[in-house]
Image (cartoon, rainbow, N blue to C red; front, side, top):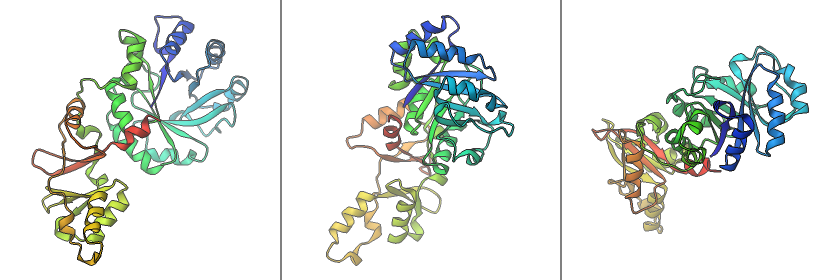
Length: 334
């Protein structure tokens, strides 16, 4: 996952010093917030004179057209427009490499649809736009998953309240870029902060239930209506390589994975009609408890002797409440 350092979050240093500090500690890009102020392009000129790092401009204005000439004269790498401030004005057509639309947590993701043909990415605002130091709104974990389903070919950027703990979860959810400001400049060093955002697994107060795939996002088949077609269809529809098997009261009975189906077919390869779907169930799968913290979850996974790609999540009564997949962590590092 890329980290975009918010340069105006550091009021203790001169701008060029902040930029050099971020560059020396391998930040991926520089985030510039602009609240309808054309003078921001003077800072962008200074950035260009100081570093070759990509410029990530977040423009909050009701009239983006007035910035078109500035963008053409001082193009940026990433340009994001704040949706809630747009007032029917057209989006800039040039002066950037990639265009994004920023949405606050209160705005429906459907708002992106209107601009999806023009935009390459969404910027989900997890705190109040333009204000530094806010706490991450965990509702955005769900919004990230929902956006990926609605717009699978668009990248997801996240801004607001991103610390080492949140960054780990965002990486696991496949987020392409996270903007960080206050966290970068309140740690002992910028270097340790960047390392934390990219790699650290810190003490956590977020629980598995806060960022897992919810029950309606988790593939499952009722034990009462179990048959091979329903199992295969559930696995195919979810694209998660498994389906959970649940009792009528919601208690997890087991799972059937792609590997379980493959092994069952190999055993009955001479006569596939002999396959009994009940025999495909792994009735003792590895599961996660929904109340585990991120730290506890990581410790649990490290104890396992086999690679973990997905896990069903249960509550204290053994009822299926969701699932986690870990292939998104790999995607998020790209």
